[in-house]
Length: 312
Image 1 (cartoon, helix red, strand yellow):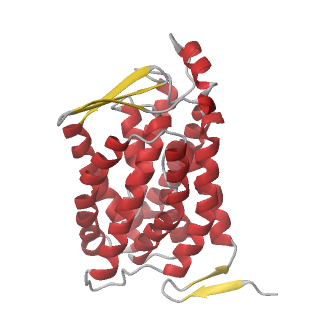
Image 2: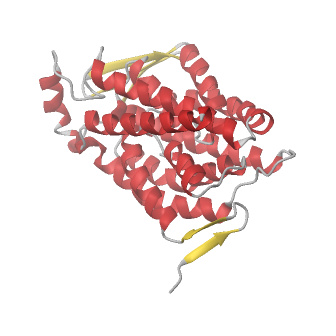
């Protein structure tokens, strides 16, 4: 029995179970780091499915909309959602997504140029992840598995995460957000986070990823926040900015096809629903150093292949 299907918007013909299976595998590992995996699904669509029009970015947003709620639900249920961080990132990324849309349509409609853009984004994120793994944490040991003062104590606390390690509210002002997790206090400045979120929104809007894959590593590396608390906020921000992205790509008129391929995006999303939920559930048990290393190597290798294709 032939189970292949053709998607008319994208022109893709593939086995009907391939998109959800790929999305499940990608989202399972990616959601542990607070990202939806859309940054990996887009290269898969471009290189393997040969979906290269600007509509591929919008289709990636559809995947986020369908898949992310299950992971967000799990993080909220486990008490690991930092709500102020989520709202600050959303406030900054939403206008950036609109700017990113115009960059994608006006300056990156050519598949070859878009691959250069994608390669640069992936290379930066991949190298950033690998640097975190090699360099280890500076302020705390929460995001990786490094050795150092206080790590043994944290491991003991973290071993009881199921029994009540939740984000506790702290000081909140117009400039600073502070919260507590596993007996340690963490904070970030709102203006700096807003500026970061705006840049992330622009890149994410053009790429079609929502921005979680970029903002999560930055929150860990530059703001010293633990990935166990960043993940939920990054996913929620990606979800809401993806809704805005689909709206912009569907409604704003342009001279090239930009509306998403809904059936294809939904198929990816169906696999992502289960992968996101399982990833959020398993995050506390997974060695974060291993996850980040795998993601970093995969992203860097993929980025290099795109840059080589552009230069060839």
